[in-house]
Length: 333
Image (cartoon, rainbow, N blue to C red; front, side, top):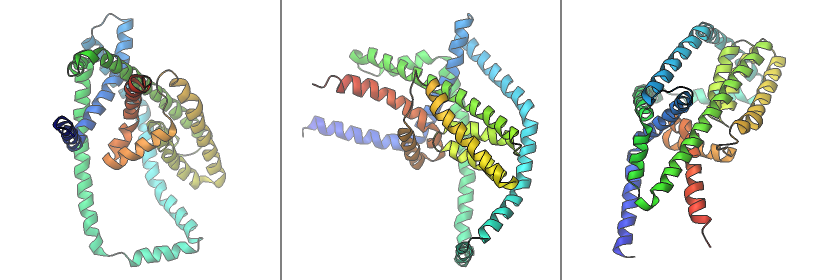
């Protein structure tokens, strides 16, 4: 091994350590890129229809988004607040019903007794420190979200300047390929975001309507949870189903079966019809790839890693297709 190889290996090690130390900064930056692409999609459509420059288009999109959010808030927020209060009233009933159910299982009381015997007040001290750490983490997350939003607006205001900056740091003979790669990544990420947004709205409306027809309480709250968690495929829809199932458990066993059938039908309809149809021209991730990405980034970065795992995999899949498959594997003889 010559000195040049050793220097390159050392540079890679230093770069890896630096990336790990700055992982939260890079995560905020990537989240800002995702939000900037989400803003760029309607800006591009608006500029095709109207002769507007980018700053005015960005301002119009932000104003329309704020007004639309405020209108939906005025329309849905009173009902949503009422259902959140109703959820607080139903929780004790649900706990009582679960308690009566668990008492009918013979081995659960012994397990509860063993847990109580192993309980001690000294173990509350680490729990208190964990709660304080959670509060500090929530404050830090709020600051990171604000910085992410600000960076997203700055990126959406002049994306070509940032694109030229990224291209300028690459070798001159490879700049045309990098420019094409960035265009492919932007198109794939924008298509994925648009498709997932339409899919989430469809799941929200269909779940809300289905639960309302079944006369299940908290239909709006359950539909909203199912729609939002559509952005976390594989894990999200399954977790979102727990809320309507828990509420249906208070109504009757028949309602539980009906809600379960409804959610299974909607999940399969979204997974095998809506999502492939919307993402057929962009990037459609395999369920195994999506799940492994969520588990890996969740273990490394927690909840933010889970939320940003799929857009990151979308970008990495395009980069792998362009850089590894076309430039290396297809030319390997």
